[in-house]
Image 1 (cartoon, one colour):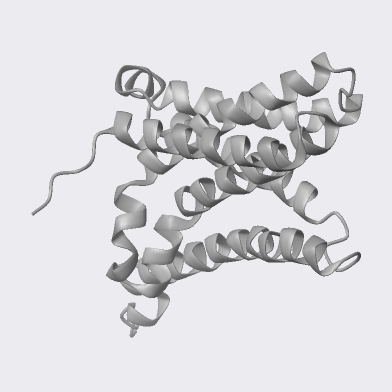
Image 2: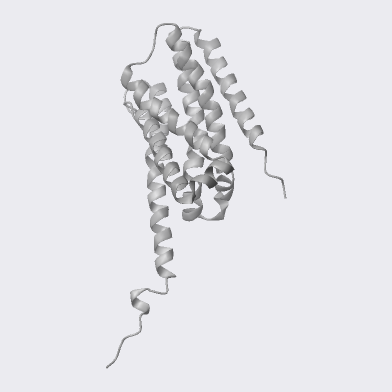
Length: 213
């Protein structure tokens, strides 16, 4: 059996991929607003492709079986790879601000909260901190944070995904569709787990013995 890849390798690989992708956009479109915007769009989508399996991996196992176990097994590594890509993305945002093209306040608030959620989950995923919080608090922090991050992605990708050129549609529609499907998978998996627990519960109404007088 192959050993589980080290977390540092996942993070380094994701960071390197984000750097190369951003660099390719800057070489192609220049280092001005157009190039930085293209690099931001590219790194956002790369980050999403790491975030999505971290978000929905367990749900896919519950719904579709053990073929998706690797997504569940490497959920933390995928999440930290997303953080690595996010770091490159934030560097590009800083660059955008330095050239006088800073995003609006509402954009900073919406995505800033998502960034805080991402780094907070990554920090609190450390063994000692997670144990100190307890499983209930960790579950709540992770659920709220992950769903807010997905919400921020969806707001970005649902920016008129069916309008504009074919390139615009290709850049938005697939990711918008995935952002909408992901919470559906989680809800469906939760329903299946609840049904499984109910079926195997010793207190099922149908299994109660009838009381006869």
